[in-house]
Image 1 (tube, helix red, strand yellow):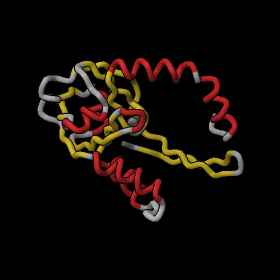
Image 2 (cartoon, helix red, strand yellow):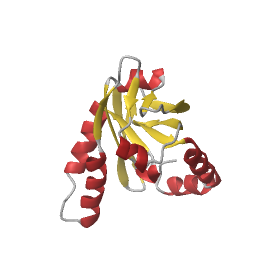
Image 3 (cartoon, one colour):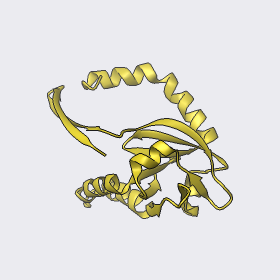
Image 4 (cartoon, helix red, strand yellow):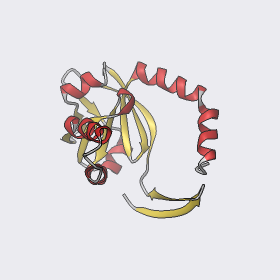
Length: 166
């Protein structure tokens, strides 16, 4: 993915934001088949490449990263101090659940059983592009989460405004 870096000051802090050429955007509903295979939308396949990493995500969804993006995440996690309990726990959470997967000839990935169970994935799933990753949600759980976030939209915008993001 092509990228450029933008730096700016906000609330006395310097922020660095990567602008991604092929940012992952959008929301797609797909079916998880009986063999735990999931078809990726063409736009996501084109942006992510053939080798991917899938792991536990936050809010009980799954995170799907390109091999390159996962290397960046892994680098940052490895730089955290293992002396702190919370960083050890989060690093374990991300790495121990991670699995390298590849797109098959028809553009599907295999969702490992432990991750399917973690995210309580049923047959219908939502793939949501979130800038540098794809989140994989059970369709009903996504609907519930989305409704909650939409209700909090104004409050979230105010918080981001306070730190200079919006």
